[in-house]
Length: 174
Ligand SMILES: CC(C)(COP(=O)(O)OP(=O)(O)OC[C@H]1O[C@@H](n2cnc3c(N)ncnc32)[C@H](O)[C@@H]1OP(=O)(O)O)[C@@H](O)C(=O)NCCC(=O)NCCS
Image 1 (tube, rainbow, N blue to C red):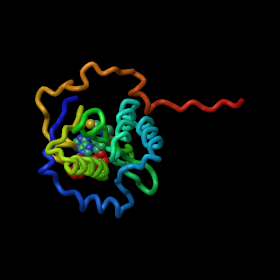
Image 2: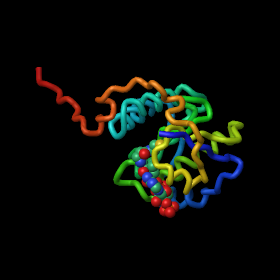
Image 3: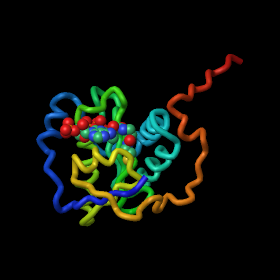
Image 4: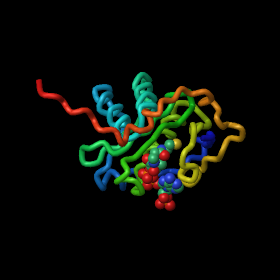
């Protein structure tokens, strides 16, 4: 779980890929405040409580420091920045069944564009994950000595990483 660095002044241009994705029915945009509970509940259900907490924090930023991917009206992905630390990208995730179709790349790119527009020259990808995805899509490279970095001593509950398998409790009839 090391960090990676991205040169925002050298970002590739994925505007054509973003337009193609939109033409095929997937829109990537910032969520609106009224969508907060749907988004953080979705992140909790598909990923973890830790990630949904980070996503929750992104809704306290102005503008909201998160992008979501919506395919035919359904949430299929999310990405946050400036959440756990200023200048940090993450977390991000795409619905398993939708992976490999370019959604993760556009979520990442839109966040990094927003960070660049916000005045950053570099972005840190916090606590990677799939390093090849980041190096391939935006030329990210590992930051030496960054493990465990800011996550040192992080409180963890075993149940937090098991959200995916968890079944919601059924309502009992009164
Ligand atoms: C990482 C993740 C967000 C990527 O989303 P995605 O929509 O599948 O990615 P894309 O389809 O946009 O992939 C873009 C490119 O990166 C590559 N890529 C995607 N995931 C990769 C991975 N895990 N490892 C290596 N390469 C990967 C793709 O093959 C594609 O390459 P191409 O341009 O040659 O076709 C998604 O796999 C995911 O949700 N993973 C689980 C959560 C996670 O690990 N999040 C990151 C935490 S740091």
